[in-house]
Length: 476
Image 1 (cartoon, rainbow, N blue to C red):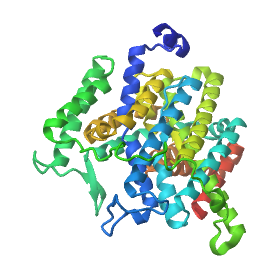
Image 2: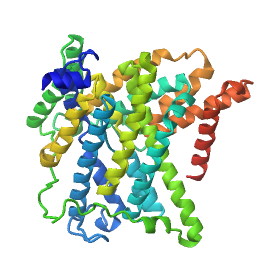
Image 3: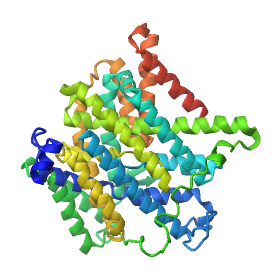
Image 4: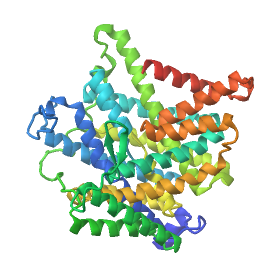
């Protein structure tokens, strides 16, 4: 079996080993598993009847679909685990690249608060939109849309995307371990060291200690440094009381079916949801939602691919890399269709996949390991959900540190290159959006070239993307 695995995934050819790939898959799982519980909790916002006046979920409340709030949350969690496992496995087997997929938190937020909250669609109607967007995304990918998008993004912005994602996930890590906290005057501030009995203080100290340990292990070239550091932090968190109490019991309910949310998409309701604008308004709104979902999905996945491509350094095999990226996006689209059919929103390539590459993963076998663990998360959910945030934060921060290495490729002495790159890097973490960072980078790049008399230098695809982003900012 070992020989077959090495041969299928070309592990030795990619200068890796089965042990390294397993470490990489484990690291990715522990880094991303929190999303499989966070996304369902976010999607519960699409059911305002599930919350009391204090904004807390009341598990016994009956939703418009006949399920209780607790049943809905459990169903969404199971669907998220299955969709993540399917997307990751398809990607691993088709591309041979170390990527992991799962329900996108950004798109889940868009569905919950914009599509369902502001626009008034039901969750079932939103699932229909996600299903259609997955099919449209797959068709676009078959026609090589992803290759045209990559060509339209200037090299300095590609490097900036990698660095911006590094800052983004590092910032998420700092928030998770409470190293930075909300502040009414400055948006965020450094944690206030309030003593060893304070949760935030101890979580921050434990995270910093874990980062130092990982850095030392990495300096000594010890394989699995990130995973070893994470496990030690998890163990240390127990006597310190820094772990979370598991609240999700996936076996507390006898649904009588696999998933009560499966195949509940309301296509007719989605396409006819015109309100006062009538049928025409409903069609225009539906198209706008589908286009927005496709754009968010393609740029989330494309950004991760660009960032990881720099880490893996596959650029010398350009044609082969383009084909693998195309297959990655196809897997993304397939997983989105499957996930929406089971009741969960758009699946995309997780930006945290970069942790898989940083840990040494170079083949799809890392993804196979992560995929298996995503399925097991269904059975160990009460235990997986107790992983301390300080442990997750160590992986996010150290991965962000390594990703910043590409900054040296940007010429900051040339303002034409520096300003768009800076906007891209800065606005990805500051606005919590990959799309905002890329959009501002492309818009400033295009405007600088046009008004400095170098309009012909800008590619046609770059112009089209710039106009598209401007229209999105105006109308969406």
